[in-house]
Length: 421
Image (cartoon, rainbow, N blue to C red; front, side, top):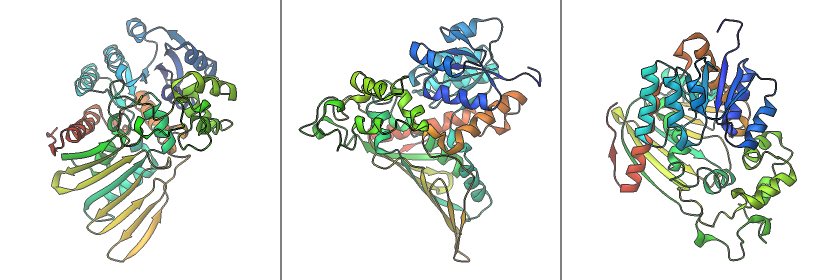
């Protein structure tokens, strides 16, 4: 690749996330040179959107790995969670740098194999822990490192998933059942457990956790509710009405890309209604198609006695994370947009507003964090300098281990020690 040549990217899985990363890469001047997408409708939609790109279509990732001549400089692996391991390992061994959607893989064994393959091959592996890359997170990290609140003592962190977002992804969607993807703490909140490690900057030593599937259960189904929202007499009043939720996004370009494009490639009123009539996103949320928790608390103790409590819950609006940080000389309250610092010595508060864009949803790129991640990855591949990547493979694996041990703590009702890396 010469200075004048665009960096070439192959997309393995052209669903919502893969397509989103492709858009951001093209906006950065990269070229999409290859795609693997088994679903004909999604493949057609992807090729139509990127018609100006020199894309070669492959049936499988193995076809790319087997090609003697490289078809790209790096690949995005955004397949379903349980299909991460083989393409990530195979393409790493073939010499491709990897941008890997989180989680690394559902199990520690698979995740360890992926990390080992990347390290053995000498390729870059960037796990999409996008929260590290936002201007908000970097500003907060700098404040803590500069001693703005003295020594950090404890953190209180909330992930407000949003009632309709939880229903979309974790009741009706791809992450509804643990056997199909993984526990919700891994598939959704590995972002947050990783972010806490980044912010605190210390190894985690002990973890406990509590949580359950409390609300989205058959016994909570209203007596008049039907199997599908389109037929339901409650469709105009139920908080989880698919009819009301998804029709409400029609005409909004951001939300047509997500979540509507997850339902169907025909993002029209007729197309959405057809998807609600025939697909999983039109089903009643109380019909038992799901088994992951809808709320969970995780408590972590880090080296030196620093503590963090993390709450993730379905029962909120979809919004940025909320965090309170308590130090020996002050405190910080953050809402994902603004940081309010309280200096105890002067008993004064001041406000910092980091640069951000959009809102907290995946549709809007997590407030600009997705753009920053893609930029950092492409720069690392272009230059060979990995310093812009805010976590390496071993670090990502370590924060995933906290998640797996938190799930062990939850299911065994125990406080679990975290082995030193």
